[in-house]
Amino acid sequence: MLAGHFATWVSSLKLTSVASATALQALQVAFVVLIDRLRGHPVRKAVLVGLVVSSSGVLVVSGVDLTLSTRALVGDLLALAGGVFAAAYVVLGGEMRQSLSTTAYTTLCYGTCAVVMLVCCLVGRQSISGYDATTWLGLIAVTVSAQLLGHSIFNHLLAVTSPTVVSLTLLLEVPGAALLASVFLGQAPPLGVYAGLVLVLSGLVIVVLRQPSRQVEAPVD
Image: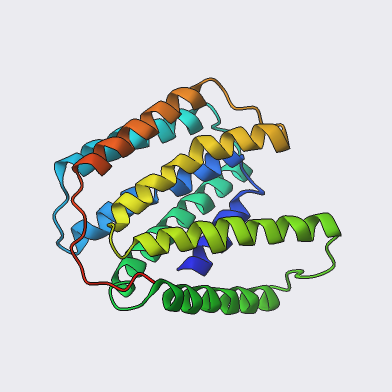
């Protein structure tokens, strides 16, 4: 699932804007709620309210960036698929973390993801070498910050926090990515980004304040 998330979402960045790609994949929280419902798990009212408020913020951020073109549409669909894969990733991760420590789980998960992606790149004849020093530094920075630190923190929290809350916190990526894209890529965010940030934070606060902690005996080291 993690490999599928990376393959679809990273590919979407070539076809649509950073703001739209990040916003659409961040809707993984909606798919997490849907998966929980399909599994027969009740969804608290506070979660639904927070989801609606935060998702509204996501739409505010991405709504002004809609581009009516085949290229952008494909990119948006890939980003949405990335959100579906990410939802399955955190739901399954929440189950696995009840019996596996953070170190054991992340080692197995990231290792499997790397092997799957390597096979896909080889089969698809994608270039995995020959990059300049700047590109390699960027790849290393993304791996260390977003993967080894970011993903590992979320996977650590899955032992004591529901996948829904973990996914909601990822909505903070939406305004953050839009602002970073403005600085590094010249994709200036509209004023709606700031209004969207307020909505995202508000929805997150609603859920976190009303969501009980998971009472489990799970390994967290």
